[in-house]
Amino acid sequence: MIINVENISPSRIAYIRQTGSYGLGNIQAMEHLKHWAKTNDLMNNKTVILGIAHDDPQIMPPENCRYDVCILLPEGYLIENADVQLGDIAGGKYAVCIVKHTTEAIKQAWAEIFQKLSADNYLPDPTRPILERYAAPLIEQHLCEICVPIN
Image (cartoon, rainbow, N blue to C red; front, side, top):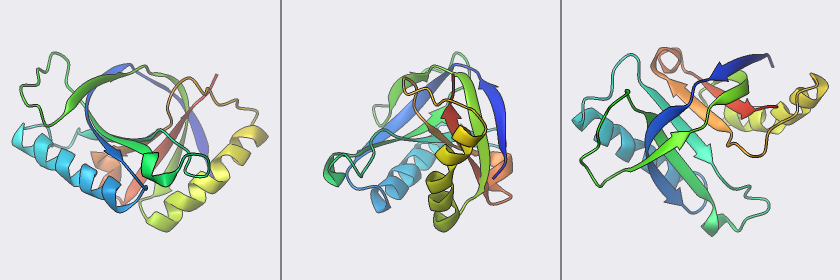
């Protein structure tokens, strides 16, 4: 597992929140967001979609787990559609790991990333969310990124 450190810029997002067990509901929320983004001319080769798992299903009852599917918005973009909510990503320093975009590879990365961060002397910042980043150029290569905020 290779980890690179990156400064992620603060960004405005549109998002859809899914509450319940992680899995199929997250995929459905992702498809809903992509459909919304396509109809609003936001899907192109520079599109960045984020997944934010707010809760640890080992601690939180699965039916209460929250997952936000987000799209980075161009500066000045105005939303006129109530299908999505507006929000912001604070940005800052992140440890970024590129992962194959498969269920198994992502599960394995989640299982290993915190041990690797500790071994590399990185301290996660619990005040900012962990991001699953799906950038168009990487998705075309069947890759995604897990971005862990660090101090």
